[in-house]
Amino acid sequence: MTVKVYSTPTCPWCTRVKEYLSSKNVDFVDYDVSSDRDKAMEMITKSGQRGVPVVDIEGNIIIGFDQQNIDRFLNL
Image 1 (cartoon, rainbow, N blue to C red):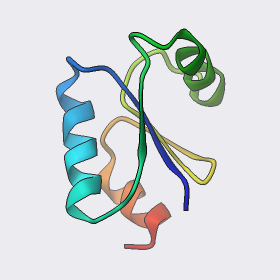
Image 2 (tube, rainbow, N blue to C red):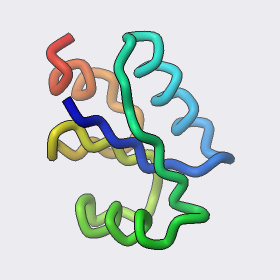
Image 3 (cartoon, rainbow, N blue to C red):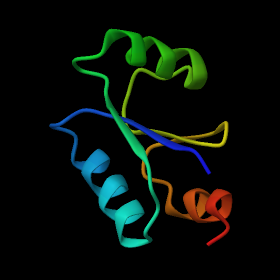
Image 4 (cartoon, rainbow, N blue to C red):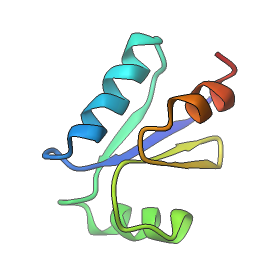
């Protein structure tokens, strides 16, 4: 399963998303959109959002730290 997190280092909700995924032993790739313009544009294209965090679970886009939808798409 592919899980991508689009985040910035200073975003507290981004930290919570990553800590939550780690606590559930979910492997994910973290993209720092503050320093990677290509990934920032990818995030905006996928989500229509400029705010972080954005989580992409197998093409299912979750805006913000939405634990219920994260669990749903990860089948937790």
